[in-house]
Every structure is written in C-alpha cells, then in structure tokens.
Image 1 (cartoon, rainbow, N blue to C red):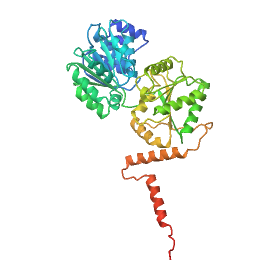
Image 2: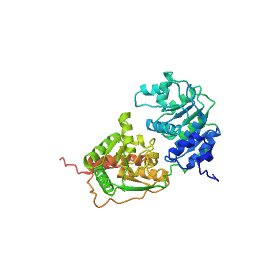
Image 3: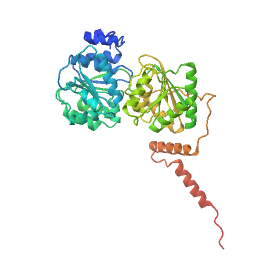
Image 4: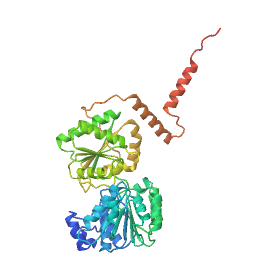
Length: 435
C-alpha cells in the first residue's frame, strides 16, 4: 500500500463505530485493517492471509457492522463461521465491543455447552450470527432460524477448520445459504485444502497478505532447549518458573502440551511444586471451566495457564509474556499459532521450546516452514539432568525409526537391525559335536 492509512476516520467508518473504536483503545488501524476494510466496504470477496495477533478480527467485524447498520427483526444477515468455541466467543466479544452505539443484535452458538441460553439468544432474530459449523447445522435442522437473508459469509481460521475436518459441514452450509452473497475467508496459512475451498466459494477475490505465510512475528524471541527426557523437561520447567517468578519477568505464561494427559500432569506438578496460581484447559474440560480459566488468566489472577492446542488459536489475551512449548507440536503450523499468543500488538514476548531426541525431526520441519533456525541454548547449570528411563528410551527410539521410515521407506529400523544381528549371532554359535 503506497499511502498507508493512519487513522480509522480515513477508512470511512461511521461515527458510532469510531466512538466504539476510541473507547476500546485502538489508536490506529493495523496493516490488515488498512487493506481489508475498504475492500469489504466496496463489496468485494476477500481472501486474507494473516497470522494471529495482526488485528484481522476487527478487520472484518468493523465493515460488516457498518453494512448491517441497524437491527432488522428477521433472520441472520451476516454469518461468521469459526472452528472453535473459543474463537467464536472472541469474535462475538469483538462484535459486542464495536456495536456499543449501534442497534444491532448478535449471538454466538457453539458446541461444548448447553443449548438453552444459546437458543434464547436467537429469539427475536439476530443480525450477526457467529457459529461453529456443527452447532450451526444442529440449530438449522431444528428450524431455529432460516438462512435466506444471509448477505455475507465469513470463514475465519480456514486452515484450522480443514485440520479439524469441517470440510463436509462447510459444504452443507454452502448449499443452504443464498448463492448471491459476499464471501470472506481468513487463514493464517494457505495449504492446498484451503486453496481448494477458496476456489469453491470465492468469486474473483481480492487477496490480502500482510505477512509472509507462517512467518513468526519479529516481536517474539525464540529459544530452544535440547532435553534428553521427560524428567529433565520437568526440572527445566520448574527452574524457569521459579527463576522468572523471582525476577517478576514471567507475568503471564502459557504452557502448551501435545496431549490432555500431558497437560494434566504438568498442571499437577506446577500446582504441587511451584508457588504460582495455575489452571489447565483442554478438550475434556467443560465450557464453564475453560472460560473461567481463560478469564482469570486474562485478568491477571493466574500466572500460568497450561493448555493443549485447543487454545493455540481463538483466544486473544493481552500481555502474555512467555509461551513454553513443553511438547513440540506435530502439526507444524501450530508452532506459529502457539508462540503467536505472545508478542502481540507490537509488544515483545518470549517463546521457549523443549525438544527431546524424538522431537528433533519435528523441529527441523518447523524451521523449514518458518524459514528460520530457532536458536539453541544449553541447559542452565542448576537444572539436574536425569537418566532416561528404559521404557522412554525405547519409545523415543521407535518414534525415530518411524520418522526415518517416513523419509526413506526402505529403512528397516534399529529394532529390525538389532533383531537380525541377534539372529546372525545365534546361528554363528558353535553347535555341540554330537558323536
């Protein structure tokens, strides 16, 4: 953009929106807002490639509220689809914040919680409906709304929707909403599945790219610790939390794990050993528990939040000082989304990753994806390095074998070679002389 917009006034938004923006503390539009809002206002289909923390939610919410103008007692005119309940709630909160001075009705419907309150929110009609695909289809089948008035469809975090297997539901939704509509698609990355989806429903879209794909934000300092085993990971985690706690640097920390069991174990350890308020959220936690934990963390009542990738995207918490990847993600784009929880809104943050020998394969793939080597650090002298248990050693060896087979289908594996070696040695043994 040759002449960047320096104020929201220049984007042609109405006074009600400008007042709400001012009260929300937004001083100037981000790059994605500068490029996207005029295109949406002009009625174009838009495909936006923007990583988390760039302000993309406001980039589509603001012009859509501008178009909606005032409440009409009928069925939805704007449909925003999101992959997770957390993201749906975040988008609804943005709609609520920016529609303070507008006569607009909105609602968010999503799985994982009761339907009674959500159904009540639809009574009398809504102008803007935020939904996860499954709950949208459930309510549609119950005839809680009709779709013939939908003028704009937004797919947010389209790459995550593909990862979570929502393609069949999205296709069903495309069949039941008006063909003549404005379409907006936003994604942090553009894998083949998202490109295929965009070709299905976008018509001559304007493409907005605000950063290179899957590039990590420059405001995030990255650090990687090679670690031999799980016990040493725990020892380093304890050291970091206690050290940063004393220096008061680690004010808000999110610790990401790959599995729910790992998240629970890390949570229990911190709760038992480290003097910090901590909560854990993952797919097995009910909606209220997850929301309470996120709200407490956002308001600074918690110092540490342990989570699986259910919250790598979809929550917008300010002032997260640190992200710790206790486990390396095996969906490589999730590394970008995890560390994107810190270093937001032009503030600096730090992302620390723990890597055992079996995770080095995934780190190499992540570095190739982000086109950057993650700086390695040695374990601090005060961190005890434990001996790797035999069972964990075997598990890692099997995983490394699996990785090698992925790269080279002819690779037989260390266990196979060891077995063959034992077999050969057995046959080489001198047989007893039977005379």
